[in-house]
Image 1: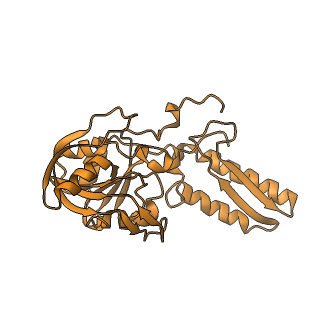
Image 2: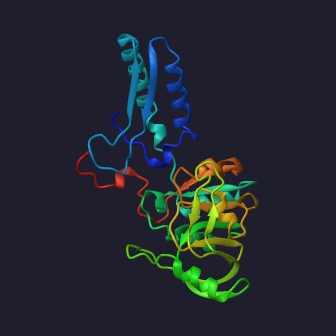
Image 3: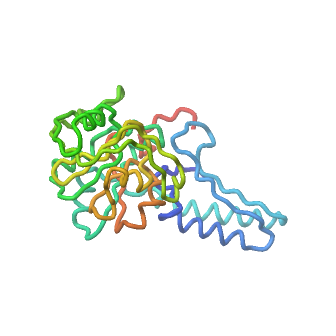
Length: 283
């Protein structure tokens, strides 16, 4: 297919991919068709075949050809729907605060599952500036901050520079006084559909609070795709209004059931969300 699907719009749990997968499943029920599939592609790669593809297999050549053509037309018609809406942090927070219930902010550009550093602070800074009364940011990888929290102990106040410490960072850290709410050793087992049974070893962890905003800090990078990562340091995401997660798609498996709304945010990070910003040379 002659277009790219950004990673954050490839989720089969959300539109437009959910409807497209239903069309693919219908195609498989037709006589002469054994299998129909969509390969969504990997838009962060840079080679001829990194885009999406339709594959149909069966024992009736005419039926297979016709089915593949129909699926191709369906995807071509829906190309505009895969553009989606990307929000700046301040706008995402404004919309989230107007919702009665939990809103998830996907910090997709700092998703460590796609190679990002997991230590950018764009959404955190926007929350602080907006004086969000009930927010969560997870997971910021900052071993220095975690070590400082453990040295001070639960209940202490620490003044530190949080996040944006990667050698590739273009941001300034958030320098402030944080309250150490809870500490953890980073050893726990995933309980959600994506990380179920995985033995996490994220090093010393901490829940830091500034005003009404709680931050989950780890010593090792891990995509925020399991509620256990938050519960380990005393946070139940279902009890909070705005929950920002450093993930693109995988968080939906465990977090989506508790959300009234999910917004995709373009805060700083290396997992570029808009393919137009990528410098392709081989496509």
